[in-house]
Structures are given as C-alpha cells and as structure tokens.
Length: 604
Image 1 (cartoon, rainbow, N blue to C red):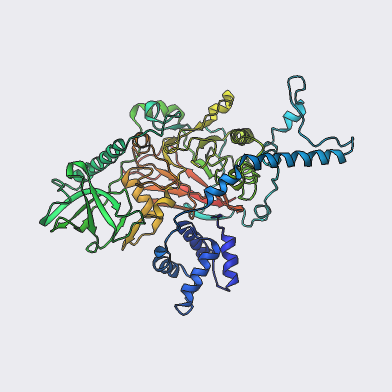
Image 2 (cartoon, rainbow, N blue to C red):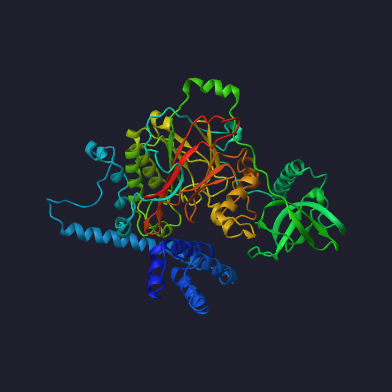
C-alpha cells in the first residue's frame, strides 16, 4: 500500500463535501496507518457509516465510534503482491535493459553537444587523471554532497515539499510556554555518553539468526518471574497460585497476556500464560468483572479472581505495574563532574528519518534541518534513521546509481561537515529501515571509520535501543516504531486516559523498550540480546519514541515522553522536536523535579 498523506484525505473529504479540521484529518490518517487502509477507502467507509446514521458530523468522538464499530471488525488482507513486484524490479534482464537504454541516451546527447559545452558524462577519476581540487572543494557544501543526480538518474526535486506551508510552526508544546529561548550555545561542555558502557552496552555487530525456541522460552519465563517478584513484594502478596487450579476462593495469579488466535487481541480472546513455577498453562480470562483494564500481548500481569472449573479464570482485580526508579549519579561520578558542571539549560534537538520525500531521492529536508541546526546552534542533536530508507520506492526498485553504503556515507558526511561550525554534538541512532545496516533488534550502532579525530569527539554512535546520558539527564532512545506496533494490538476499557499515554506507561511499567510479544512481523527479534540490551535498567528522565502516528510531548508518571514525528510525511514536510533541559538536576525539598524545562514539536 502506498503511503497515505493528510493531503490525500483532505482531497477525498472535499470530494464528498464533508466538513473537517486538522484534528479529524490527523485522526483519519492515524486510522489509515493502524488498519492499513488507503485515503479513498477510509473516506468511503466513513461516508457509508455517516449516511447510515443520519449524516453524523466528522468529529473525534464519532471517529472513535467509527473505529470501534467498523474498522476493528474489518478483516485484514492475508497476502500482498508487494514481494512479487519487488522481485520483478530486481530481474537482471530488466536492469541490463535499463542500463543499455541509459547508455544509448547518453551517447545520443553527446552526439548533439557542441565541443564548447563538452560531454555531460561524469569525468573518469584514476591515479593518472585525479579529480581536480576545485571539484573536491565544491563537495564541502551539504547540498552538493547530497545532489540527487548522483543517487538516481531520474531524481527531481519534490514540488509538494518545496510548496509546503507552516514552516517553523509549533504544533505541540510542553512546559514553559513563554520565555524559553530556543537557541543553544554550540561547543557546549555538556557530556554525551551511553549510560551502560563496556559489556553492558551494545557497541558492535553480533551474530544472529540461530536462536533456539527453548532459549526464547527461557527469556520470556525469566521476564515473567522477575516482574512477578517485583509486584509480589510491592503489593505484599503472599504467593501466586497456579492459574489452572480449580478453586472456589479468590486467588492471585501471575502470567503473560496472550491471544487465543493469530488475529488481533480482543476482550473475548485473552489468555493468561503462567510461568514455569505456576505450571506453565494457558487459561482463558473473563474480563467482564473488571471496571477498567488496558492489555496487550506480552504484558506481564498479576490478577486476582476465581477459577471454579479450572477452565476459565474470572478476573476481579488487575494490579498496576511498577516503574523503576530514576537515575541518581554515584558520589564518585558527582565528585568527578564538580569541575565540569554546566548550570545553564541545554538545548537538545531530535529528528527522525526518512530524510527524503517519498517520490524523490532529494535530501532537501535534511539540508533544511542542517540549516536550522546552524541557526539555532543546539548543544546536542539526536538523529534517528532511516537515512537510506528501505521503504522508499526508488530504493525498493534499485533505481540508484551508487551503493546504499555510499549514499549513507555521503549523507553522514554532509551532516558532520555541515554542522561543524555550530559545534553541535551529534548522536546517530540506526533504524531497521536503514537498507544498508543490520536488520535485527536490538540493532548495533553504525560503524563510521572515516571520521577525523575532531569529528569523532563530537559524534556518538548509539544502538537501538539505548539509554543515553546528557549532562546527568537520562534519555531513553528507540527508532523502532513501538507506539504504532502496540497501538495496533492494545485493548482497553474504562481507563479514562488516551492511547499514547497508556502505551508509554506500559513501556515504563514493563521496563522494556519493546514489551510486545510476539513482535510485529517487521521486527526480527534476537531474544538473547534483547534480554541483555533491550530492557530498561532505570526509568529515563526523557523517553524519545519516533512514530508514524501523531506527534506528542507528555509527562507520563514523571517521565517526559516525546514523539517528534518524522522529518518527512510522504511527499510533504514533517516535524522535528526540541527540548530545553536542566543538566545536573537537583532535589527540591527532597523531591525529584523533572529536568525537562520545555519542549516543542515544530514543522520543518
């Protein structure tokens, strides 16, 4: 399915003369992504739904009802012809024909060119005929380094991106609305480092694709037992009973939420899988007695209830999960930092790929971001992949003139060189959509061997996921779209909170960067490394989770959670985020104060 944009949905709504606003269009776009529908299809579905109910107006409340009654009951297509089309574009004969046609076209153009203009072909560079220094010097400009003609023979600048409106518009805010100056100092003394170093941090590639099923079972069982023990001691529970034990009295059980089929979880399909110590059985759960609940596959829960027959557990109480404590630097670290303390607010900027519009391999959005970095001079800039997007049409069809690795290298060189004058610290986080990088979760960091000593000092290569320490403020980072994946699987009733807050709270209370099990089809999980590197060792002060879904900044149980959106949305510009944080936070009257002073999501 081609990517859906807000403009597509607005055009379809205009066709039916349906009144709308930006919030309802964003909600429809979110529903398109969650239910894998096109813009035309979802508007037709809404029109039919509205007409059958005396022309319901398009509001957020009516869209929730529409999703519940219509979209959640639609069956998703079982297969897709995408793979077949992909194989066709990779056919060697068709590629050779394309190359031959391009060569003939170039020869024809050369025959018409005058000697004064010369040939349009790329100059041959050899040791005997080296490239001139003038040509090399010109490449220092990010826009020239990222010239589209060097990546694709058919690249043209995106007209829709160039004609976008609302540049620099703030679309979401947090904290101090008035007063903060959104400029950093550049060349800041703030330190950027991974919280866990050495063996406790994923710093290089590893072997994968040979895990055994019993190893996966052991990891899941250990997760159930560890979280169960935390909940047992916190709520003073004497012991957990076997979930399948037939008893007439109320018992407390521990297990992992599962679905009774391969479909989407619903209130009637919930199973509880007990740990090995509680018998390891799967038992259906009746949720009708619970006043409120929010569940997803893979969630470790403690429930209270009865199982009179031993065949079905009737839950009467669901215990809340417990988050980990926040970061507290050791005394030795505090003493070491005393001479380097940064007291002024630190500006952190973040952006997530793709960095090109969907119909062109021009990196105009990235060039615009580099311009903003040089203008605002943030102290730290966190850049999430994909940098070379595997879902881009020209990448899928291999319509590029350079290797994926070379495109990525030039992309990074442009960022590093283009921001050198600002002195901004750069953090690169890979994505599973980066076509040139390891397609595994957890994902090792990029390897950049060509950086100079000065550039290496201001560049941090982080894995996905990771916990970063910026001036004694902890940042949880993941480029994997856990918000989208969990949003498609989570069910809730009577919670009174909106979905994004529930998902963020689940991540923090399950103490994991990817608590969903089984994972989404596009996530290749290595469970042994996931147990080692994919868990939270503490609750981060700030959690950054870029997603296809709507951007947000919100405080969830003391942690500031940010979805900065993506830098491009289809053919048009997207958003990026920026934060002002107080480094080396202190306690006020013995209580922790959030180090996040203010935050914004801004249109590129």
